[in-house]
Length: 244
Image 1 (cartoon, helix red, strand yellow):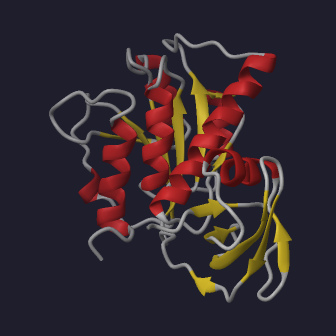
Image 2 (spheres, rainbow, N blue to C red):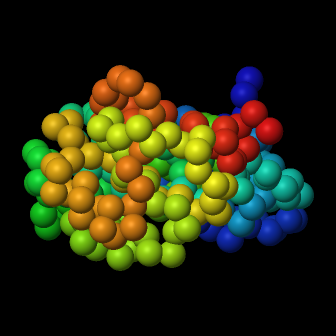
């Protein structure tokens, strides 16, 4: 039986005891219904995995005894910041989940001219928590050492400023002949993905003025939830840890 891998924001120390935070405890105790004596594999973003044994288990409280840390080397050397325009239904969920699997560092939901999703106040907070939960589950499943952060929704002007420290900034659209394999190896990439209807010419011009390079992934038009997965897979292949 596969040992469940669980993220917790609780401090973990070899030989010590720990109580899982509320979200992790509810998943282990209420969803998985695990019992004392069963094994877990914990991580909290410090770069290690921690084997642990459950010592107490309930629907709201789970305590563990922590074993020796094991270095986790699954994080990519490539820093990828994804600006993903909001989309309807489960498209955004898919983009978040797969971006985490592809090694994204952080995800910024964007609002653009043709974006049909409007989030404000409590609704925005609820969606951000939902996407962060998806990111956590994806990191647990794919073996990552850390959980990427989902930042608050940004308009493009804020996104341009937010990514100013990245040494390569790309706006994806199919109306260009520039391809990824012609570019020099970066340390940090900002990827900007438009909505279902695409970015407007004015938005593409604004991105280029802000220092973004337009690139195409091929001759076909990709959906808004497919584009980031394809782009990050190619970036990891060219400059990261896929195929290394």
